[in-house]
Image (cartoon, rainbow, N blue to C red; front, side, top):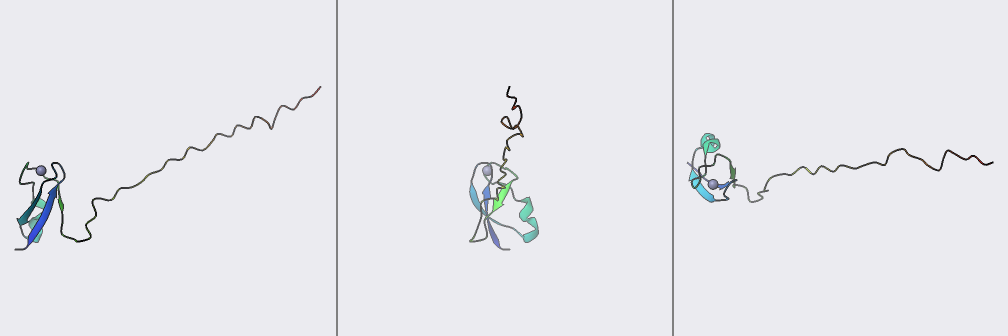
Length: 72
Ligand SMILES: [Zn+2]
């Protein structure tokens, strides 16, 4: 069986486990037992993909200078 490197999402503990490919999803942190672990197998490992959501606030349609031109 191959070795896989994992990193715990909770405590950040990195460890290597020898598991089959189908049991990789069952791997838990060997330190704290947290079920969410990140697999570190690729050299180009990216630590999560964050979706940047930008909210733009558009100004309201208030045109104060357009109306109210009463001279007299
Ligand atoms: Zn942990």
